[in-house]
Image 1 (cartoon, rainbow, N blue to C red):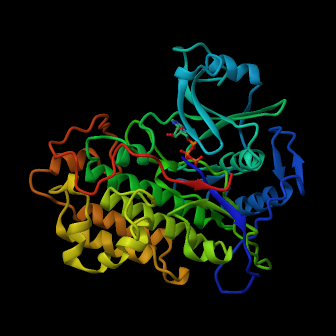
Image 2 (image 1 turned 135 degrees about the horizontal axis):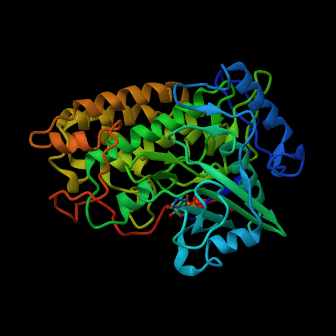
Length: 420
Ligand SMILES: Nc1ncnc2c1ncn2[C@@H]1O[C@H](COP(=O)(O)OP(=O)(O)OP(=O)(O)O)[C@@H](O)[C@H]1O
């Protein structure tokens, strides 16, 4: 949550051997109205998804993920969603992002029709700011991508509303909030085992996006976009800035740079070139946040320390200094080997040259290995409870570790999103 950046890029396209993608933000060109969903979908995007789906067996592109032939989304009227959210009552508000407010709502579990508070299932209803210039593009992108993609580590979009200038989206409710809220907005340090479980889930979600025939570049990976279900399983949300990778004959640069300070890859900021490896960079920044308990970008830190990566990158290659930068609130919950391995994968994700960053599939493998490595005396039951495959539900984490960690930035403002 927070302001986002957006400004024209000056450089021209060039072949680098890596994929880059154009974004001209021409919202109305090349769009059509889908008769099945009523959503405005770019004809280019739809055919590319269909192509990707047909080239995989029955649309299935990984063990657990799927590209659907067409979105299965419920179309809501504005009145439906007014009913579901008690007229967007302030006390039903779950949070606020750069593009609007998110409310708790109730719908029937089977039909998804709006219901009275307390009956049916809880959903999250995002109402976009009518004055946001980017609002429509974001809304459309969310319907295009989340409506077509299905994976356990992507948040489910259930439906949408477009009526009289009102743009709304209805999602499955994620009761544990975002990774950001646990890392930075609680007094109690967030346990290491949950941190690693969550980044593994998020890495699987990104790996799925990157592995489709036409890669999906997520473009806004950050702790506030990693939402958590009741079991602390991670689901990536907010596809407003997502882009399809280019087809073979295309190579472009973005004309408007968009994302969140602290997470955007240097090549994207400098040239507008967008790669799947730009997502890997942002993932590395989240790993650094998870290790240190510090935010990617914080102007309240002393000069030279505002950008977490610029400040702490040199520390990641020194075994001795890694200990100093780890969140003090979780001391004793991980081994030295685990901290060193985390530093190493983080460092490779935030490599300056995108070609030197690993693919997300490799990152998943490394993190799963790190999770297995973490055998800390007297913590075996905790490890079992939060293993990434566990169905157990650690709804409350109560560990006896010291709060008020040195360096950790809890209960402070959220990162700065730029570009609305
Ligand atoms: N499906 C959901 N279930 C529960 N809470 C949600 C859901 N989606 C969003 N929220 C909450 O609503 C708030 C705003 O989310 P939103 O996605 O609009 O913005 P953001 O990602 O925090 O910021 P930005 O829009 O600047 O990227 C967040 O605090 C998030 O925790």
